[in-house]
Image (cartoon, rainbow, N blue to C red; front, side):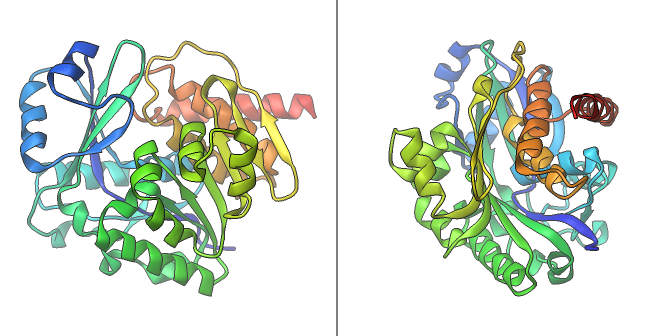
Length: 338
């Protein structure tokens, strides 16, 4: 038995989420529905504009949200990241521990600098626009890796955002090589249309001659494979990974398990906030694959179910109590259907 179900590394970002109008996005010159990297000046401009506005705050970053979802469901995760010795960094470390993750972080040895943040703007139509200031996360490197944790995991998981920094991209490549040396399965999320559009060569570097599992949404799949035909996109993804899952919002997801496709429907819900849905999907999917002997179809059903629940509320993740209750509900339904 491996000590960890999933080892992940990624940009440690304090997620700060605000409800805004579409006009606010225009006023602030924010590109809607994607993640945009911002510099220190834009970071301060946005924080100043929303100062005093009610918001939600949580330790985040895409990979962190995914591996926290896994731990909430009952899995065991390790997260490598980098934060600074500032108020946001202290908050981040405390929140990581509250969520049950093991990590490379040491409170007594945090470097000077500015902890990264993701300022998420949620419009009334439930769409999210993310503005990411990497801060010290931009220097996340091989030094933050834990070879022992990687070697003692069932999967490593990379967020697509890791390719935006040369240091972090190098760390991801090193972690991938360590995983291969120890027969640890490798999974990757494309994370965002802009990652698939502007950083495709670096994503291909991580994939190399093929990995075990790719997560993406439909738009990311189209951009990454350079086609607008879903069948063609799936055929290309099959050459990149042994298996993949394409999320399709209200249409559920399409999963390829290495042998056959599964078109998995989902429950229709009133969407409040889509932030974190893809991260939750990946976390639940990886939890299912590493527990209870779930196959890919069953993993997709659990992932769909959990993702539909997170979009019904504001914020990047559900409470532990809510996740526990939902997993019990899902397992009861699964047993009754079998």
